[in-house]
Image (cartoon, rainbow, N blue to C red; front, side):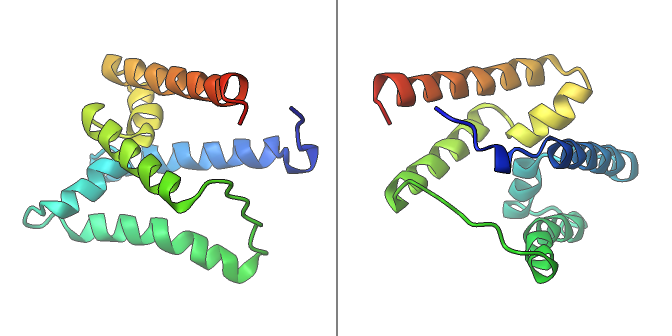
Length: 144
C-alpha cells in the first residue's frame, strides 16, 4: 500500500472540519436542531406543517454547494472502482444502518459527540470499528 502524497491535504481537510463544526454549531444555535442529514431528509418524507422550508433549503445547500464550487474551480477526477450494483447495495446498507443507528455519521459523529451523547459515542465507535474491519477484510482476506 502506498500513500498518494500529492492528494494528502491536511490543511484543507482541517479547514473543512472546522467549517463543518462551525456550521453545525450555528445550526443548533439559530435553529435549535441537530444537523444530522438523515433526520433532516427524513423530515421531508413525513413533512410537518411549517417544518419544510428550512429542510428544503438545507438539502438544496448540500446539493447546490458542490455545483457552485465547480463553476469556480477545477472538478476533481473521480476514480470509483466499484460497479453500479455494488454502489446500490452500499447505499442501501448505509440507509439501513442509519435507521438502526437512529441517525447518520454526521448526526452522531459531528453533533452527537460534541454534545457528549452516550448513544452517539457508541454509534461513532461502531461506525469506525465496522470501517476498520471492512478495510481489513477487503485488503488482507479478500485481496481487493
